[in-house]
Length: 393
Ligand SMILES: *Cc1c(COP(=O)(O)O)cnc(C)c1O
Image (cartoon, rainbow, N blue to C red):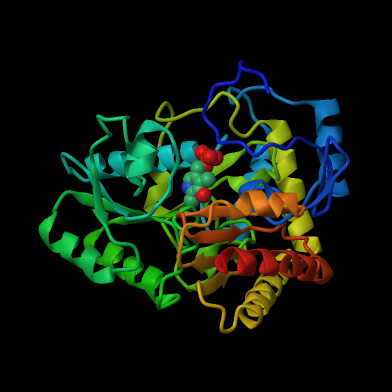
């Protein structure tokens, strides 16, 4: 590889040249089953005909104009996102960290509007919100922060899945104005609240009682990944702010934050902006993505297939020492081992399977939403012997 790329990624030694559905081919002609989907981005798999067509048609018509003008595709996408989420207003940017950065700005402005001098936001241990200065400061992982001090102030950290800790902060920290939380922690290890819907419901209650904004980072859990359009829809509550990116544009960069009620009225002209955000090409990709998810029934499919995959792994790993748990929220799947297992990524690659390991000990699977049952069976059949062999060493 060239020396002219910044040395920021520990890359796997493979170069993909084409894809179709859940399959990828490298420059040697070897075929791989993609169980990572570009980290929850390629929900429609690779080269989905509806997406390819929408992008090609839009590129031939208009790619970019500037938010100085009306953008019809952006208005259509905002309407669609509000329709499926029950939220009120959308702002478009280009990535997850940008969406979270804007949510943080929104919370600060909301706080100042209430007369709070140094507004603070509650964030969680093991969270991941991005790599910009404010979002890495909000992130609950020292590895992401180390060396980038001074961090952005204004965050109060509590353990994930611990309502008592949040209530304690409410009693002792008067300048809190918002909570920022992933409904299911992705990078942190596919961490699912132990009490299911109760956690977000509890947070909603605490936020209402204290006049705080509930801000959900659905960058990874959103866009059908957990079996509903958005993970919060399993819980019966609504957030004040939700951030989106990864799966929204199927790989064409687009991020969004979506707000409701008072939170939707916090920003006014001049408060925030983006050159590329919500351009016609990115919005067309997102509209095509949402259309395909709906017409192909991929929300329900993600839930069914995710549960099937979890059960298949549980059956195969019964009595296998070293497998701690298998957990899933739709097609966010985590297999937790009792030891660091990063080397499984390379072994799976050699076996023609793309997986990820996060939080050192958790095999993370984020397959395309379009994965079929027989392909999921292949995923299980390929991964199980690798894990068993790894644990027996
Ligand atoms: C990936 C991710 C981000 C960051 O998104 P980028 O597009 O890489 O900036 C933020 N939050 C969550 C939950 C994520 O999974």
